[in-house]
Length: 109
Length: 116
Image 1 (tube, rainbow over the protein chains, first blue to last red):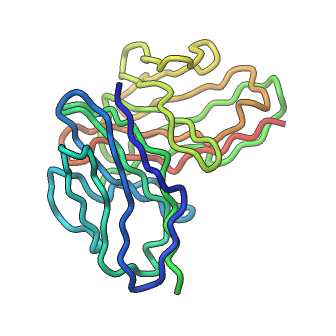
Image 2 (cartoon, rainbow over the protein chains, first blue to last red):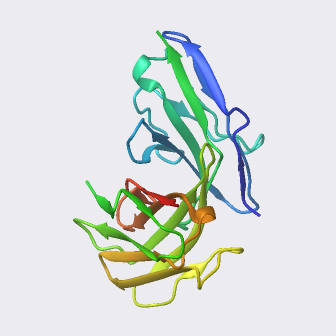
């Protein structure tokens, strides 16, 4: 069965501090991992996906198959990063997604 | 970019009534749409996968007769909550799959349903 675990419900950091949002997954096949972000009163939107290996808004995430993790990182948090972040898992070639419970990131000015 | 429109954004109604929520893909055709339910401070739970021209595939534990899904065209899927009760109050989100871009799903703004 597919499962995504985001252990932190809430993460508070000061502006300029590094951020790491944790995500672990369980999947028997070849996984595709995504990070979605939901800003206040806005729709869910894709932040990044592991196969792109790109940095979006300063965020990066590396898929670690050995540790079954896909942690989201940013070296210097900004106030505008405050939002809900969801890690999502899809099977290779599949468009269905399994979401984690989400982590609310709060950046303190 | 691909836009998914969901309507209404908020609805309040009496217990026992049926409520229809629409999900439209505005600038693309979506052969597959998804319906999620989100409880306060919790994650999105997939309710069903809606395929154009065929019956929806429901996730385990989701009542088909309670949550009727119709995907009659490539740009519209509807979710009807039949004989709604207070426990059906929730945030319902739809998404659409294009298949030709690098995103697995594009999400609507969601519909907040409150049953009195």
